[in-house]
Structure formats: structure tokens, C-alpha cells
Image 1 (tube, rainbow, N blue to C red):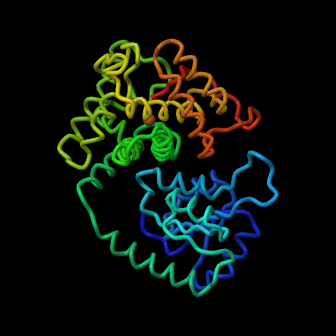
Image 2 (tube, rainbow, N blue to C red; image 1 turned 90 degrees about the vertical axis):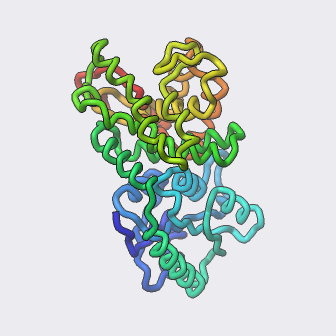
Image 3 (cartoon, rainbow, N blue to C red; image 1 turned 135 degrees about the vertical axis):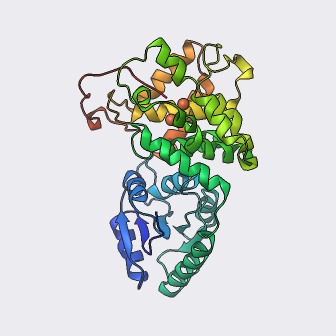
Length: 343
Ligand SMILES: [Fe+2]
Ligand SMILES: [Fe+2]
């Protein structure tokens, strides 16, 4: 997707109209919620994203501004992490620090000073033009991953959400920056091995036959082989190979048990399953956030997953606003409902 000259402006109406006035020549696409911002990022590639980071005034307990969630989603996903985020903070040191910690590239005061904002956007545009010329082998692998996503009946944005959620959970688990980077890439690349699996098997709505299962279960190893030659993806190999293991040793391809199953691969797996069961798919009805976390706790009781990581996953999903919270927002099940596929 080519770089667009427009910016994405996200927030409530009074915030947007103030910023809009200061934009001058620059055009903006406006959105209000985190979900609208995420959908917009899939359809066009803005030169920068402008978000509201001011503390909510007179807000009810528990409500959160969209700025931090949007920023973390952008910086957590491999495909959008280089997208510049400009945050408007409330002038306090706390809100400045919060914006930088969430990954914002620039923090400006609110209301914006038009000349300053426009100079900042010109600078962002110049930098983007230069970095866009850089291509490396990793980008070829990402192109392959896109081919896989097109092959799979995934809902749009699956890889972006899985990467961002895994990074957030990894951060809550105290993992180091290199591992978080591997999780970010893992969101996009964990299923790259599906390139070697026939479409009829990947998109089969019902249960797989034992023979088809054997073929399908090869995708982690094929994926590892594709990424193996690239030095920059070295940290990612265990995540790709082991994203379908289970703590009791009943997973594949290696039947790893207990502490042999690395935490980053567990986190990527939980994020992957969470996204699969909370989004609408042709073969199942989506679950709410609470129901999905309950489902994963059930799997923890069976000995497959780690209950503490499931708790961190719940926190991460809440921070990023992933998954619906109200039963009534979920569309009725597609007919006929097939197996609940989680891969
Ligand atoms: Fe997979
Ligand atoms: Fe997946």
C-alpha cells in the first residue's frame, strides 16, 4: 500500500475539530473509536496518526481514553509499528511520560499550535519518504505472510491484533525488548508455514480427517524452515515452531511438556486463540471477552494453558480494547456452526 498524504485523526469530536483547524494544508481521515482506527489503518496508509492523550476530565471510574489503546495497537503490530504517532498530551509530566511510554513518536501540547504541528508533519513526511526506500529480506518474508493471510479465511486484521496483544501480554509478563520484538513479528509470521498446506484443508469448515490433520500439523515446521535463513528472525523460530504445543505435552509438533514450552510461544498462542474466538468467522459465533477468558481458563484446568498467563491476557485485551464486552453486540451464529477452530 502506498504512503498516503493524509493523516488519521482519532478522538472525540471537540478534540478532532481543534486539531483539524491546526492542520492547514494537511487532510485528515477522522475516526472516534479504537475499532474505527484499526479498520481505517487496514484500508489506507496514513503518513501519521494523531491521537488524544489528555487525561479524561470528569470521567467515570474505569473509562479509558482511546489514545493509549490506539497507540499501543499501532506500535505492537509489525505492519504498523513504524507509522509515526503524534500524541496531544495534557501539559503534565505524567501525560507526557504516559504518551512516550505507550510508544508515541512525538508529543505536542493541546490545543495545538498550527505552525508547530505543520512543521512536525512535514518532518514526518520527509522521514517516511526515505525509510520507505529501504527494503530488506524481512520485507520479502512479510510479503509471503500476506499471501498466507489471503489464503486463510481469517478475519481482517487478525495478524495485527495478535501481534499487538502478544506484545502487551509480554510486557505485562516482564519480558525483555528483544522478546517483545519477536512477539510483534510472531503476530504476522506464526502461520507462514500454511503456505505449504492445501487451501481445501485450511478453509475446511468442518472437522479435519486424521489424514488432513497430519498435513495441517506440519505448518509450524514449514514456517520455521522458511524463516530459518534470516538472522533477523532468529528469536522468532521457537515461537513459530511451538505455537501449537500444550503444557501437558499433547500439542504438536514436538509434544513439549511444562517448562520446556517457552513462555513467549505460550503468549503468542494465547493471543492467537483469543483473537480467533472473539472475532466473527464463517464457522463459529464469536465469544465476548469474558467468555473467551473463561474458555481459556477452562483449557488451563485441562492442563493445556497457564492460568497466570491467561490472567495477563485478560489485562492485555482490556488495555487494547480487543474483543466485544456485550453479548448483544455479537451477530447470530452462521449456519451451520462448525467446529470452533482456534488456529
Ligand atoms: Fe498455527
Ligand atoms: Fe493465527
